[in-house]
Image (cartoon, rainbow, N blue to C red; front, side, top):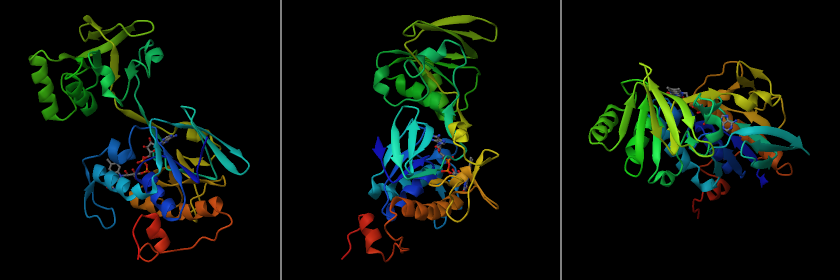
Amino acid sequence: MIKTDVVIIGAGPVGLFAVHQLGINGLKSEVIDNLDKAGGQCIELYPDKPIYDIPGIPICTGEELTKNLLNQIKPFKSNFHFNERVQEISEENNKWIVKTNKNKIFIAPNIIIAGGVGSFEPRKLSVKEAEKHEGKSILYSVSDKSKFKGKKVSIFGGGDSALDWALELSKISRVTLIHRRDEFRGASHTAKEITKLANAGKLALKTKYQLVSIEGDKNIKSITIKNDEEKTVKIETDYILSFFGLIMKLGPIAEWGLNIDKKTILVNTENFETNKKGIFAIGDICTYPGKLKLILSGFHETALASVECFKRAKPNEKYKFQFTTSSKEIQERLGIKTK
Ligand SMILES: Cc1cc2nc3c(=O)[nH]c(=O)nc-3n(C[C@H](O)[C@H](O)[C@H](O)COP(=O)(O)OP(=O)(O)OC[C@H]3O[C@@H](n4cnc5c(N)ncnc54)[C@H](O)[C@@H]3O)c2cc1C
């Protein structure tokens, strides 16, 4: 069981800044996200797009903002638990127990839900044999590419992830790239590289094909695909990598007894607490009169929620309002050497 002051659900921009605001107040936090990396919508939906309304930063991309936030919270050494969805919460002696789908358990007086539009989940393969192979030989993201060395890998999708991994793995595996259309959605220069590799026989390309079935009991042996003319092809396969994009689901958050209004959580604007003591909601997932779904609103909500988290985590200490420019205590927490 991991003990901490605050469990943060969601590593989007707002969840990341929560680590900072809690950290400067002397609170420890653990961050859980269903995705394999930090950044939420900024990284998943618009990493290269410019943002123009972050105070003090005239322009930065979604990726740059994420990198800067990660840099800013380095001093607090928070642990990140990626690829884990928070599934259940329960109360015990005025503390919250938080359980993930991988059975990791946390205990804390506070939970901050910074879950955005819900957890991003991969769109799964729809053939019935897929489920038993998921997480073993059917994967929706890659954490360790070495397992594909010398293996036969069938990659599905036509976006950047599918193209990038087809290029990368073609160096170490026997790759077949399968896409239901003729054109790719991914970057045109990557698509050109793929065609070049296919023409050179270094990668097999099957466009206008879709998955029909998966053969093999314990391990996958082959897959069958078919095209628009109903022509079927069997392909020997050890691993399937499927990149059909992400869907957003409010998921388990909807079942925690919180006051929900149109897939968002109602909070008070004094401290962004929900109807449950010690559970806060900030960023896109919270709602209140006048709420704007902007990153800067989320940052403000974070600051106020962290004050209330302090009071619950350290009931015997008095909260002190301090400026970062002049507080030696905060500067020490930030690792800044003061005279
Ligand atoms: C194309 C586009 C352009 C935008 N441009 C701007 C702009 O210019 N300026 C601006 O201010 N805003 C902009 N936004 C909005 C901005 O991106 C959001 O306001 C911001 O991302 C909200 O941050 P967040 O941290 O609340 O949520 P998110 O970024 O949505 O992150 C939430 C995270 O929580 C995780 N999560 C959810 N539920 C669970 C669970 N149960 N377990 C584990 N993890 C979970 C998700 O996987 C996700 O990573 C834009 C949005 C889009 C789509």
